[in-house]
Structures are given as structure tokens and as C-alpha cells.
Length: 275
Image (cartoon, rainbow, N blue to C red; front, side, top):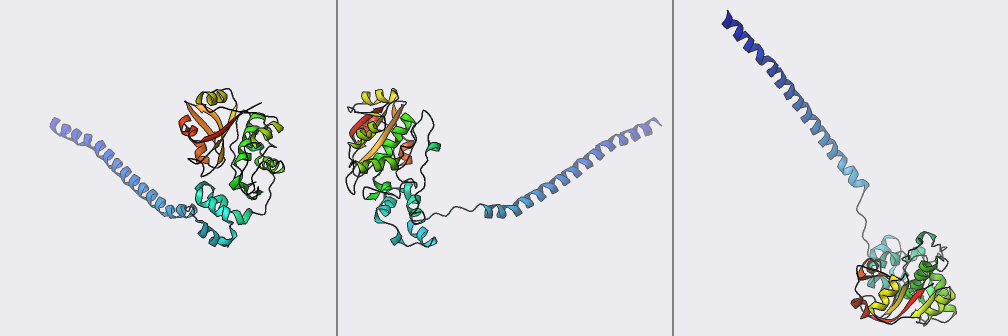
């Protein structure tokens, strides 16, 4: 009798284990089914998501013109040259037929933060399609754009936008017809708008001393990293022994830090600007 009871107890002891195993197996089956359903649902939705966010169309000047009903003859040669020379300005050139007749109000309040120097570009749509010195501001407006950034950064006077300074240059004959801005424009126009400008000697110590004092330096560079002929740049500060610039022609150049040696080999003239 004792043996029979013991055997019965042993058999009953396995029953909870078998029941637990069955429940676990059932749970695994249900979980697997739910995962398969979720995966199928994701796969079904994937094409819809892909359709909702298509890859952006990459245009050339020719394909953009064709897609928007324009002719290549609608683009003036100086802007076609800008398109070919500066990939960063290509969207600006492609949109010329759409915006060429607009003269939007120029309000730079959003570009100005107290204590900082705004980064502006000569091919900005607000002024780049306008004619400056018998050419497009986008091609010849580096001088007025550089000085605009400097005056705004030093004084906060946002009315001194690039177009306003380009008009000043034309009215006072500080430009060469069909070309660019003459050097005398920088000190003359700066003083007119309340900023002192002084010719600076070309040396690393003089440039870094001015920049570390909170002043700004405008330089004229010759052929090299920035231009095939002549170009104005604004030097805005020193960081880890390197010089930060605002290049009105190139956002990429403006993101880089430059060694004095690399810049000095291209600099033809320079002024420090201060209030």
C-alpha cells in the first residue's frame, strides 16, 4: 500500500510541470504569430512610406529649364558662367527666370544677432539678380557684401545691406564698369556709415591682434583658392590659431578654418575695421 501511494504521488508531481510546459509552448506559438503579423504589416506599409518621401530630383541647368518650361537662352551668360564656376550657386542660377523681375524688400533683422557677424552672399536672391556696375550683383558684388557684413556686425545697422552699399559704390564711382569694386570703396564707405577703416600691414601678428581685439579685417585676394582674378573676403576671428572667414561667394569656404600662410600668399591688400 505504501508503494502504490508513493507511485501515485510521483505521477501527480509531474502534472504541474507538464501543464506549465504546455502553457509556455502555447505562449510561444501566440508570440510567433503576433511577430509574423507585425512583420507582414510593416512590409505592407513600407512601399507607402517610400512613396510618401521620394528622393529629390537632381537637376542640371538644361534639365531644370526643360522641366519648368524655360529655354537655355533665358539665362544670361554671366549667370551661366556663375553656374559653371560655383556649384553652391547653381540653385540661384536655375531659378533666375522665376525671380528675375522681383525686387523684394531687404530686411536683415533675422540675419543679425547682437555680437555676431552675419554671413551674407552676393548671390542671395534678394539682391543677386539686380544689376551692379553693369553686371549682376551675384557676379560683382563681393566688395559691398563684405563691407555690409562688417558694418552690421560692428554697429547692428541692418539697413547697410549689400544692395544699399552697392548703390553707394555706384553713386560715388567706386567701381569699374562691367567689373568689380575699387579698393577705395572700403575706407570711404565704411567711414560714411560710422565705421573706422585703416590700412593694415600684412603680418600674422597684426591680423590676429586686430581680430582678438574684436575688430574685423577685410582683405583683397588675387587668384588662388577663392577667385580667378580678384575678390574681397572678411576675416572675422581666430580659432585654435586658425583664421575664420566670411566668403560672400562660398558657404563652404566660410565653414573652413584657414592658416595665415595659406591666406597671406593670396592677399593683395587689407584694412582693419572698428568702431
